[in-house]
Image 1: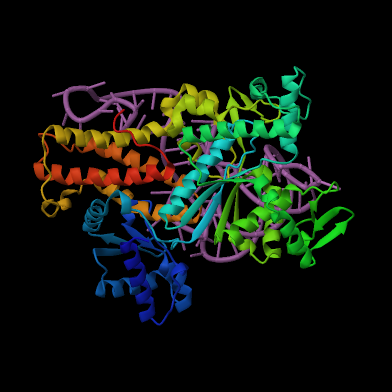
Image 2: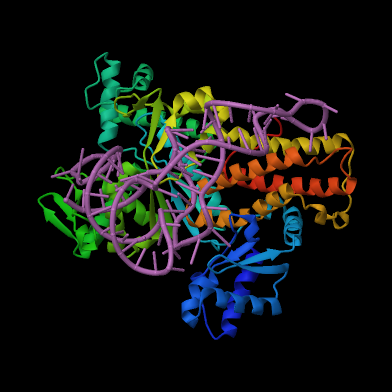
Length: 541
RNA sequence: GCCCCUGUAGCUCAGCCGGACAGAGCAGCUGCCUUCUAAGCAGUUGGUCGCAGGUUCGAAUCCUGCCGGGGGCGCCA
């Protein structure tokens, strides 16, 4: 919460206390009204608290205003009671000027940084696409989300480690091997196999033995290299690549099963072993060992999560899955409770499906069929920044619909250009400043109170909001809020740029200095936000 | 049948821990380049917030039911 907002909140609490009422801070809000006529800040406290005092909202509002007029907060100019009982705060614009001075003073590294996480160790697992083929657009979509969330949480003071879980074992690897060998022998790949063209390309390179496991592992490694390369193009790097096979080979999976058995949570049906997950809220019990004696995917996944919490000591784990893995959520949570770890420490975010629109056809994809659109094609076409920003513009809870033709053909309409252009204009102003040899005076001699044009004030207000947006986006795991802020802020900057010349014969030098300062602050803000999304700012366009 | 998302302008989406006349971009229509990049700015057209109840001083927002869309309920991974 900003200092000003905090001060108002505290003052309102004091006012209520003076009337003998103790209120919780979450009981009311101090917000920025959508309309500037309603002041810089506004509170609903009189409306929600009126019944506690047996008063009418407006008369309580009057009492509060009287108190606050006696005990004003910093920058307070006047108060207004409006509508059903809102208290509107009109402030001296110096609160914005002081805010700007602070932004410029602390700079890009510290502005909009929060200590919300207090250094808590968080593990963030995302993407984790099976190495049975190249990444498709949907994988890249949620990979961008995961990467942005990691950046966001780091900025909020969490100690984040990102991880890609490599599913490099099991039936799918055998199936991949079978498909590879079939291609090498010139046979058709069967219905259940991987039919994409990439299998053909790999088959041409494979010189190993006629063994489905060896061939499968070989192909998976090749695919993984391609996946790393695609992610690299998007600017995404993982701290850890964790192998599923390594978990199985370490004996950790047996360990988990016996741990659960010792708690009486496993029943045996011949060779099969069933985890009584319904006791922890799952909708049905789950097999951990199959009839043939192999572990199920879930068994390995539980061991993997045990490893995250207990072996590696993460305080919190966030998994980002596609909505098609929704079925795992209840089972994993059940297992965490069964193992005494606590399901509340495991946060599973589900990314809704991404579908692509080409012309009027909604395309359906399948990795096995091989009819997917590779992530790399999109990145090569529109660039990493646009790819990221596109996927980060909407909520994870909403099934995204991407219009391929539109994105490719009319990429000028992509919001990334709008935002980049704003940054490029800021940089351009500074280039002109340097070309003309304008040297900024000492900071203390710049009169920021000259910034009173509506465009300047609007820009300043939005800049001041960024720290709160960062905290909110981090707390709610919603990086798209940063993207929305960027669009809004860029729009305000374009308006300012159009209406308020910074360097011109028609502008007094004192005002030029103040505006240069504003531009510097804006540049800090936009660069912080872009960095959170992993988008590279452009100096010129 | 059960579980998770979702239904807001012609299209893509914000707003959803209740608040003041429902927002943006795109598409459409009108204007604006002799000064820091017109990939821009300004204006304008366009909405029974899926439907019906309920809670409330106040509901797009909360609750219930219904209708529609996506995903999931494997000894696949």
